[in-house]
Amino acid sequence: MARYGMVIDTVRCVGCMDCVVACKTENQVPEGFGRDWIAYETRGAFPTVSMEIRSERCNHCDDAPCVSCCPTGASHVDPFGQIVMVTHDVCIGCKACVASCPYDARFVHPEGYVDKCTFCIHRVKEGKDPACVSVCPTHCMHFGDFDDPNSRVSRLLASRRNHPLKAEAGTRPRIYYLV
Amino acid sequence: MRELILTRQNHLVDPTLHVWAWQIPIYLFLGGLVAGMMVLSGLFLWQGRHQERPFTSSVAPLIGLVFLSLGMFALFLDLEHKRYTWRLYTTFQPTSPMSWGAWILLVVYPALVAAAFVHPPKLLRDLVPGVMQYTRAIEARTGARRMIGALNIGLGAALGIYTGILLSALGARPLWNSAILGPLFLLSGLSSAAAFIHLVARHVDEREGLARADNLFLVLELAAIVMFVIGLANATEAHRQAAALLLGGSYTALFWVGVVGLGVVIPLVIQLLAVNHRVQHSPVAPLMVLGGGLVLRFVIVSAGQESRWAALLADLVNALA
Image 1 (tube, rainbow over the protein chains, first blue to last red):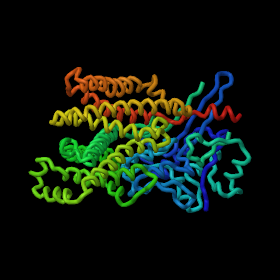
Image 2: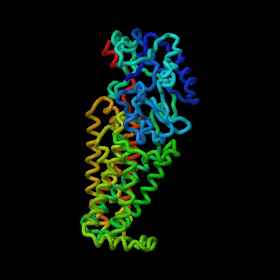
Image 3: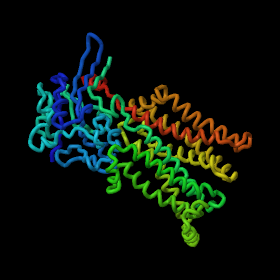
Image 4: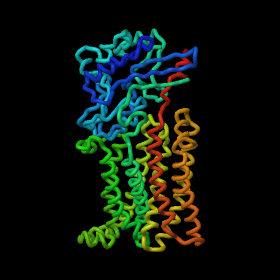
């Protein structure tokens, strides 16, 4: 059984937001909302200033609090690649999952249900990459199966220094950033 | 310098989480108040003191039905996908406190009705002419009254504690990561319930008794508040930052003046003087307790949503470099 995740190279990412636009188009994300976004983190003082640019989204955590706190089972882990999904017509819009997410990756869709990144599960099932990965002009984003030690994402993790986001929140996120 | 800029501007999420507005604190307050009334009425029914505590054991359960319905209506108003509310009752999700709460609320109703049937007040006898046959049936069975009392104590405690666990289960918000929130909300519910009965009950003896009980609950609530803050202030950096919201941050005045000062300490002093016959009983202290209970829910819900795991990676990445 696959366990999909992403590896994103912050050295290559230029923050062009193509991933954000591709996601909005592919998933018809309503105006004013985003399933993915760009983070610009600057640190240091002149002359030793550095910046990390990251494309961020739902981390499809191995221990997803949004799934365990859902009172109806709308928030669930899809057996296909362990992707965290929301069944729209089971969601009551209580927003517990929105509050439970350390990444603030969820939002309330104008139609009332809670929405978020799906890793473009509909594309992945057809053997394609998620929309954000497929359009990245610097090829900084990689999607694949962490359970397969020979997958591109597993090999990148083994060979490059990396970090996930907010590992201390304890949800075991599945997006890693190469530094 | 450390600076983080996000391009995300999602409604209710950015710049800080604010998914829960007034509806949730109102529900948590009313739920806690009803929970407290259930424990008190259950206790008197269990002890067989329902005749000498007529308001608490007979009228309060009926008022509880109204308050709980108002609270659940507030909860309903908060839902964003209202036409699917029924989905709560086609499943049970054991890891979700909200699922536990939905089912607890469902069984609380018959427990409140049963409590009111033990010694029905005149209003209920007028509204439901056949009620006395249930009362006689309860009287005829030894242990039935005690069973109803125990049921109300147990369900009241579950209702009060779940409203706190509901928040503490959301690990992404460090301010809520305290198991003390459950007992704290139950104690606040008990003090609010005792204050409410003190405020509106007719029998002097019953009011006096509830004022004494309220003083005990307020002392315990104060202890729970102190433990809650100490627990956060001695945990990880994220929890200390959450505690800082109450210890110098934006909620400091509201919490220490509105909740602790005006809602617990000052009414406690007034009521201690009143039960020792130094001052007259007045509605002032119980009204302050009720206000404090309401403000407590608002502060915890709002400050909790502002607390978060640090968004900046700088320290972590520097350590790795």
